[in-house]
Image 1 (cartoon, rainbow, N blue to C red):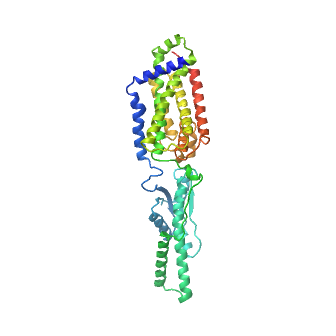
Image 2 (cartoon, rainbow, N blue to C red):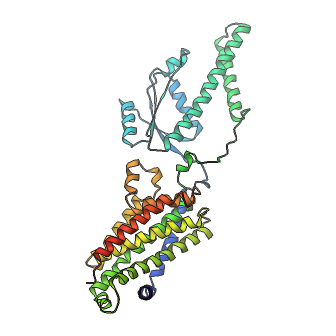
Image 3 (cartoon, rainbow, N blue to C red):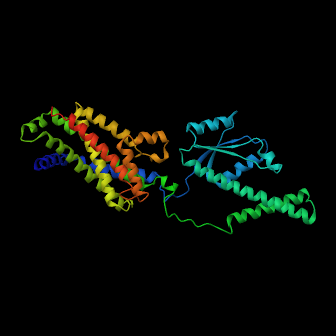
Length: 407
């Protein structure tokens, strides 16, 4: 154990002599956290509502379809993307089915005719089940339809009451009744007689929405820079092999296992210090709430850093030159960040993308961070993500041990 500690301290001393190390370990992650947190919308502190796009096809042969779309636009909740080319309804359905559009609203050709004739009209809403956006857009459309239905019923009721009392209204009187009824509904809609006060006491579908702002960028950038710096440290091992430093170490009374553990240990210590410095900075400066379970947070960070350390030694053991190690480390780091949800939340990506993201450690680590930071999960509830990270750590460490070479 003493020899492992000596090896670890030796490598940490070498790292400390590198004047640029602290810049890349501490300063750059803070800068990236600030920039990404500033531009990424916050779940609880948005300056305005998030707008979603809805593909629309208006096949209506009268004017009521256009009135419906005008009412939706007036609500100013969603952006309408109109398709007007021939066969637009089939095109819209295909776009949603392929995942290129999240939802489509199709107004049928007989929409105006049915409403004018007193029949029930139906519009079709197609959605991609892998996206959250359609739930928002459908609710916005249904709110508009509820208001239009209320207007239609009040207008019909006003005309029927007038007819029973004074006979069929003239066109001029009917227009006046319609205007007054719509005005009445508009005022009542703004000040409804009954409202609902909702309070969330358990988990709902809303927990699937990822946290935003610094609640996303702070853990994401911490994971990213621990990964990037950890893998780039693989070049240390390559340089030692090429300069015969590692071979001389093997001539000393030190076992091979102690050298391997020492290489893993110093990478783990650096990653742990870096990670918890960024966690503390995020809490104090960016106001990030890291959850209610420090133990769970510690478990997630420890297993993640162990996986990174194992992968770093594996890269250092299998590459021939420092340039190869650095190039491979950079490619792996950036790919794992993009695929694992560090640059954008996995929750907003298609299902296939999420599947790929969970084939690598970053996907599980970011899931755990979102669960801790945004949803208040407990130790038991993030145990599956921690177990997956521990599995990656074991796989990488075993592979690094089997491939470890001193020359």
